[in-house]
Length: 444
Image 1 (cartoon, helix red, strand yellow):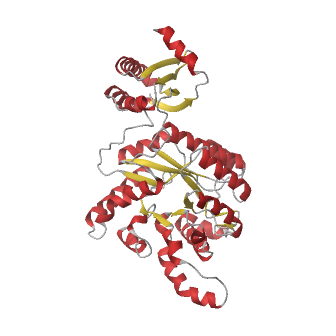
Image 2 (cartoon, helix red, strand yellow):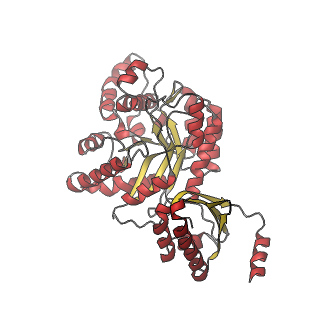
Image 3 (cartoon, one colour):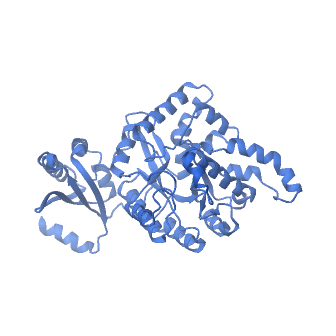
């Protein structure tokens, strides 16, 4: 019954897509910003996020997987950062192959960031780390961050960058020209240039860094840095720079104002194997994102010099970078272990009777026809009849994955999309497996 947020990896639009630039916005994050009066810190309202809608947009546009990161601004509470990472891990676990995530860190506290990075990568199985260009004026490339980059290099971590408000900032200028219009590009360029000038990526070669928004101003900045480096070095303002090693660590997403001209500029400082698709969901309206992706597909088909790179840009590069196999993000399988979930569903009142008919049919057919479906037990709250709870028990993960591809499940999923107001899937840990097996034996 994990229907709204899960689907097979076959898409009707042909060319699948991996989106490396999307944002998770949690209720804890919003509450923290509201309490601190920081909702407009970035000069732009924080949008609403809903995983069901996100997956709906992905399904409509052939996006097989999206990488979630925490939006700006950086929460001041380490607990909010931790909770956001756990919510992201839950989405990844609940919807195998659809969501990946790069964990946020509670900077500028480097010690706390080191601990969170270890927890996120080892316990939550994060697919990488998200770093802000700066947090409270602590910019990437700062010497105190070397210990963090050493850890990330040892873990072969992917790092996704995202611009945040520069520190300090001129409020009047920001009002006249909002950050997203220009300063975000300067901020990204500033942070990456700072890392390059200190050879951060050359000294910590295990780290791969995704630069957002079509590389910001780097196609212009890198040649200028190279030309001025000898003068700066002669005046002992910077040391020797390993340009090849630093630039080879950089990947670039195409979120924002991509175009054939922009891609050609990026190819002046990188290779086609380092270009990635990014949407910036949910900061851009879904309709605009759909049009943008369609336009990208179109000119990657029609431009002779770019057409050979279409598959690389849309999916293959991201699959390689994040270790995605056959278009499905690698997840920990639980083959041989019972899968127990509780689906918490709220149905729109006008559709309640129709929904119950669909649910009854799919529950009955699943148990009758699928040996690996041990039980689907729908329950209704007598005081709130639109609140449905379904206890789902599968023999193992393989049985669960087979269930998602059956005709009766797909009929249920497609038929009830408009009927369900909200869905939360809770994967439960079985504390007493032997007793559960005994219960099933007594039921026979």
